Image 1 (tube, one colour):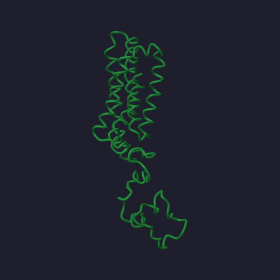
Image 2 (cartoon, rainbow, N blue to C red):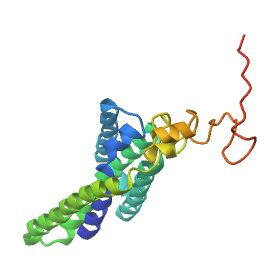
Image 3 (cartoon, helix red, strand yellow):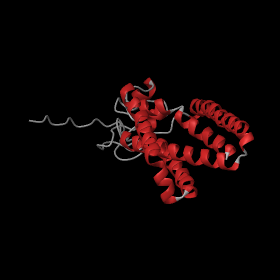
Image 4 (cartoon, rainbow, N blue to C red):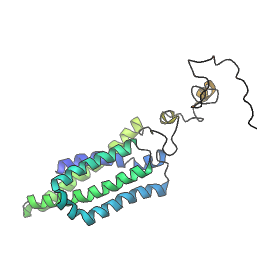
Length: 217
């Protein structure tokens, strides 16, 4: 159990180390919004602590752990692909419930299986492994983010839209390299955007002058 918790903490803390960047860059949240995300997890933890004994009695300790592991997978998926702050907040709230239930089950199981004279040693060893996983995960998350960058935004979301892939590559539409802007005629890479127009490598030659558009009356 302690080894499992340590490994889970590696992946979890790696993701949480980047949560503030995901909230700012992908979800478009400020400091208050980031605090609200953390509050969602805290509220979930309180709810899990209040109803944990009844939930565990209803579904059994084994299924509590199984459902909890699926909840962690759902959290990682939400952090990886979602651009909706409500989805991420809901996933964090569910993870808070899972964290409270996991603590109840793991502590009860450890105390039931460990001889009384070894409880202190087993508890300290468990804490050492869990804290070690947190340290490794935080470091690993920072290294991976610095090497590969944050996951690209999908869909429109908040502040999303066409050109998000270019944004992740380090070239923001309208603020990219001067050579890219000149080659695109100041309209973004490949000429016009979604509204149509000349396409690079197809359609009418791009060196022909365009007809002036009529002014809207």
